[in-house]
Each structure stands twice: as C-alpha cells, then as structure tokens.
Amino acid sequence: MTEKLQFRRVTGEHVEAEARVDDEELYTAKFLMARRVWLEETELRQHRVSDGSQRSTGYDRLDNEILAGRQLYEVAEWGGYPPEVVRLYGDEATSADPYALFYPYRGRRLSTVGTHFLAEERDAFEVSLLTGLCWLAAAGISHCALSPDTVLWDGEKRQVQIADFSQSMVFGAPREAIPGPSSWIAREQRPGSVGGTVSARDDIWAAGRLIFFVRNHGEELADRGRLAESGLDELLAGVFGPPTGRPTARELLVDRMGHRDPVPRGADRRPWLEEGRRHFWAARQHKHPGAAIPPEAVEVAEGSDRITHTAWVHTDRAAGTEASERVQVPPQAEVTARKASQDKGFRWRRGAG
Image (cartoon, rainbow, N blue to C red; front, side, top):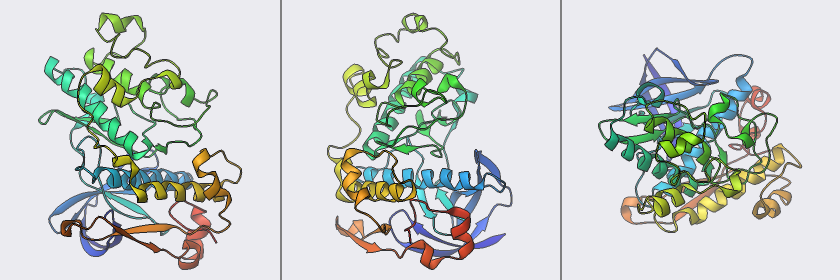
C-alpha cells in the first residue's frame, strides 16, 4: 500500500514523497498509534493520533513528541546525535491528522530484558542511561515517564534508547500529574501532590529506580535500605529526596562515576534553541492565560497579543553554514480547514488568530 506524505524534515526542508506503508498499526503509547513506512529504502516509524473520545489528548501527546524531537535535534547536531534517545526524522504538525516520523527504535523494553543483565552490561546501562538524560537536560526536556516500558536496551551495542516522549515537558513548565504506576512516578508528579516547575532533576528519581531495577535483576525498589545492600547508596545518594536536592544526570555521571560530560560545552545555548523555547512559552500563555511560566519567558508571553509560530529553515550544514534563516509561518487558523481548528484548538505548533 502506498500513500503520499507531505511533511517537514527536522532539518527544516519540506518534503512531498510517495511512501510504502504497513497496513498493521499498533499502539505505541496511550492515545498514539504507530506503523512502519518506507521512503524509498529508508524505514521509519509513523506516529499518529488514535481515534476515539480522547483524541484531543492524543494531539497533545503527539505535540510533546514533536517538540522533544525538534529540541533534541537542535542540541544534538552540535556534536553528533546520541543513540541514547529516539530520533525524529520529520513531522506534519499542522493538519487535522498530524503525525511524526521517527527512525526505527533499537532494542527491547527493560520490562522484558531487565531481569538478566550481566555485570558488565549493568555498568554500560548506567552510563548510557545517564548519557541520554544529559542530552535531554541540554535540550531543556524532561521525559516525565521513565519506566521499564519506555526505556529500551540494545544488548548488541550495549546502549540504552529512551523512547516515548508523549508525556515530556519543557523545563520551567508547571508540573502536571503523570498517570501510571506510582512506583515509577516521583511524588511531585503524582495526582494530589503535584507542585513546582519541571527541571533537570525531575527524571532522576525514576532513573535511580531503573538503575536499581537492572542492578537487581528486575526487582523494584521497595525499601531504601536495599540501596546499601546493592552497593548503590553512594551513587544514588539524594536521588529519592525532594527534587530541589537531587543530583542532576551530569553530576551522577561526571562527579560520582568519573565519566566525561557527553554534551559539548555550549550546546544548550544555541540562539535558535533559546528563541524556540521563548516562542513555546508565548504560545502556551496564549492558550492558557494566567498559567505560571518561567521568569525569563514572562516578557515574551505577556507582550504577545498575537503569536506567530516561527519555523527554522537550516541551510546546508555540509557547506559549513551555521546560520539559520527564520521564516514566518502564517497562523494555522488562516490556512487550515475550519474542522481542524475546531477539533484541535490551539497548540504550540500553530499561530493564534
């Protein structure tokens, strides 16, 4: 079966191509479906919103995956894309039937393979997991839903791959309740006790539990006394306390484990990445007037009575050009069908009329 796809590459170029598509579609995350597609010889995963009464939630979940993928690309291209996080290929984020295209996932879920790691594999797992979280921190993204079902393990390459960014949030956003088993959700993200804003320390609680899980052949941490028995009391000191006192992934990897920082210096300070974050917050303030936002975004958000989504179109990196050309995309409400506007409301991917 073939289908014409029109989408924006993560590099900024717009693509129209005939694709072969798999007729089998499976759930990849709550409210999202996935199927395989092929652009010539390139195999990709296409994530789409599932049908049903919760379709509006699916739009938000897909938005999260696209935003995280774009942010990671902007940071990761600074020094080479890390295999520890899934990689966005492109997205169609403006229609009533949006989708995201990812390179194929690698590995198997920890919930399947995490019970029989060898000692040397456990060490590689810890380094690889924290490496992935260092890249997420550089991109200003918190996964918010790390668990044995969202972290994959490639035993051949001995690398983690963090998947499913459907519940991810940008740093500085007010925390929201995360559904799921409380054993993998930190207290500040649980229903009834949510508070504060998302930071680089939010994912560390679940990361510590994953490290224990693999070190102890699939056992979940039920008693902190088990940390000392497992030789993890020093490495994970402070990890399960309040978020303000937790170590970051970099502190665990570099200061406590003695490895080098995997993220090149300055990679998280690229001008268009910072501006992209400001536009996100301006759009969010338009959608949720009065919602809490980080201090650095207040001026932009409050001064925007009409927000225009900004896209970044990058020139050929192979030619050695580092600059990017910004182009203004017309507000989505002016260029899409009325039904799309009614179905989806306002999203970060569109301008507001």
